[in-house]
Amino acid sequence: MTDSQKIEGYERAVRQIAGLLPHCRDSVAVMATVASVLHDAMPHYYWTGFYRTVSPDILSIGPYQGTPACLEIAFDKGVCGHCATTRTTVVADDVHEFPGHIACDSRSRSEIVVPVFDSGGVLVAVLDVDSTELAAFDEIDKRYLEDICGQMSEFMQG
Ligand code: SME
Image 1: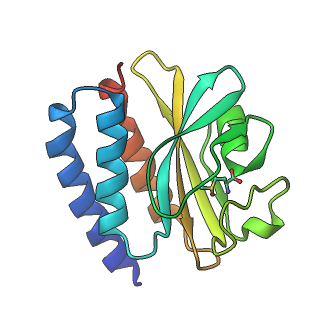
Image 2: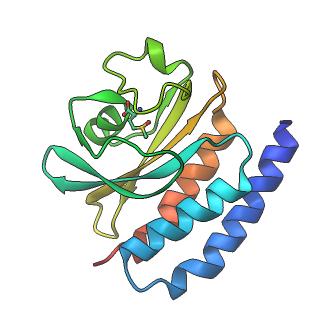
């Protein structure tokens, strides 16, 4: 996939998400919509979904597209936990090299995880995307996914 094909896919997804989010009744509808639009738009995605902050140190599975995944992740575990702890985007070019990586599906080889905050700046979820290719995620993915997670903030209630 070329950079311009990737950008084109993200531009389409951003427009579609911007049109749909104002119609979402609650945060489940927001996360389900974003996971669906992104998974459908981006051919290099294998698993696309959210883990929600359900207690100060536990993430629990939220809406997703792809194969069945781990149900709970502690903040001190895996790529998702690292993102939740640091509240910043984490890119793992080779998940098997990432300390504490949780292998929900052995086909996943690289991963990007982006924090999702509500409008008050509280971490409410992380967006996790996996690929079967090594180093599938770069600055373009980071920029667009951070933008999309930023757009979600004002709709993440209830
Ligand atoms: N690999 C993740 C766990 C979630 S799955 O990829 C869906 C991690 O290490 O946090």
